[in-house]
Structures are given as C-alpha cells and as structure tokens.
Length: 193
Image 1 (cartoon, rainbow, N blue to C red):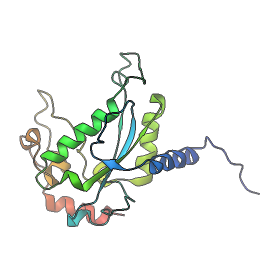
Image 2 (image 1 turned 60 degrees about the vertical axis):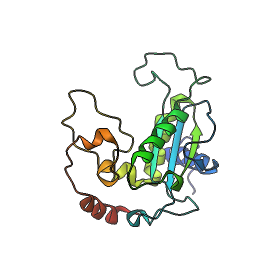
Image 3 (image 1 turned 120 degrees about the vertical axis):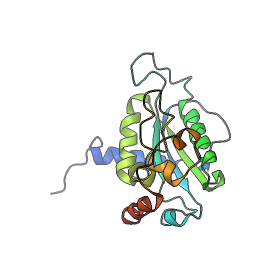
Image 4 (image 1 turned 45 degrees about the horizontal axis):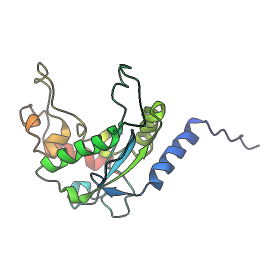
C-alpha cells in the first residue's frame, strides 16, 4: 500500500522550496533593479576556472553558493519585522557583488543569481532545504564567501578558504592562511558533483 502524501513532510516541503527557486528567472549579479523583501538565493558560476568546471554551465544546474537574507533585527528579535519595506535580500546580493569584484581571479560577468522572496518565518528553513539539496561548494568546501571583516579582538581568526582561493578582499589579507589553494583544490576534486 502506498504511503499517504503529506505536503508538510520535510522532503515535500524541501522539494517545494527547491522548485520555487528553480522557477525564478536568473538575473545578473546584482539584480539591475532594487526590490523589496527578504529570502533566499542561489549564485551560479559560468566561468572557466578549471577547479569549478564541473558546475560551470550556461544552464545553471548547480549553484556555487546558497544563502539567505533575513530582515534587520530578526536574528535578535530586536525590531518588529516589516516585510513590506525590507530590502535585505537585494542588499545582501550587492554585498556579494563587492566580494566577487574584489577577488583577483573572479569576473562578475560570469555569475548569475536566482532569488526567492520568502515570508520571514520560513527563511532559515528554506535555506536549509536548499543547502541539503544542492550542497554548494562555497558553502560546503570553500567556505567564507559570506563573511564580513572580523571585529576588533577577532583578528587572530584564520583566513577563510574562499579568500585563500580568491584573494583580494583587503580585510582577509590580514588573516593567517592555514591551508594552501592547492590543498583546497584537492578537497574540491573529491566533493564536486
């Protein structure tokens, strides 16, 4: 006997979020026009760096990074969330644009993005679904892309793998690298789709 379909089952909810994101029309990074909302997004690489060749394609089948943007104050509960005026998702994509532009070996024209405005209470769960489904390399192996400059007193942190692979962010150059790019590429070789 077939199991009854439960639309609220974890795997069915996950499939719903993945499909909704994949239905979104890919745009340039950053999107050309500002928009209202918080939510989730997937960045796609279409360039020619050899260590990313398994996921670089014009059909955007595998994101290189998945992220979220929650309304300001949501993490601490310090402010009433107003989804009608939030531009956090657009601003987060602009922040990522700056990181890619600063990288010495990346070209912004080789990136696309799909984004999905999500009701704030579901954003973190939607990101989890996307991470579980895609396992993007900038989340799973070459982490640190979404990092910001560490605050005072945290300068003893290690340089993120993303900044080892893609040098150029001024704040990251001040941090000590614990690995080489070659070591990270070996990890990529074993984890690529």
